[in-house]
Length: 259
Image (cartoon, rainbow, N blue to C red; front, top):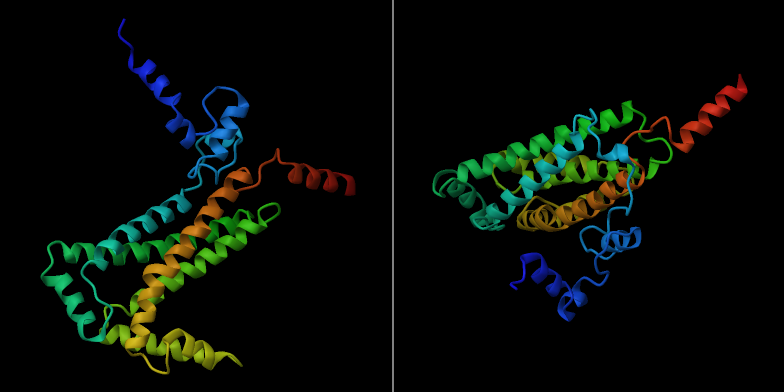
């Protein structure tokens, strides 16, 4: 009798190679489900259990999800732009012009990257305003509020560092003004200015430093904090406080007791 596809798959899951990769095995018990989440490199950031209301539709405007979508677009388009860009003074501006007039779909690629960056800044601010208005910074979500503020700062730094890369007059003088503003900070201003530019003027050192920050350091930091941010949303039971949460019940009981 010929084996079915399901039987072949069951035999594959029983092999030593499969067991060495997926060590928890399979099963429908709560233990097996928990182990499948905890031992998966992608799923272990999420809790093993979530509240039922987390899976239901809610009118949150999906500002956080839209922000993540724009970030993924920026990562994809940024990688493609890196194939045609060299972070050096003689070639930076020429490469930017080539992307605009020579490279096939280069103008579309660059504009998609630029407008996605603008959209991401707008969506992050809109998301922060809505979270603040709904009071989602209150316990037990104050840690995730701090993570959101860090992501806001990283978003602004990504936009600022990317502004210099075209190496045109607008970029040069915008970064010059911005770095001079940073130098006006009391006590540490000159050190911040030197650290930001890699020197005392906007030159090749600043271009290379901004390129590394924009393409490597800041995106990796953003991915790290985004993972923590989404993990905390799951662990906290959603973005906003609900009437059934223990903290809400205790606050209501305290108000009723005071009356």
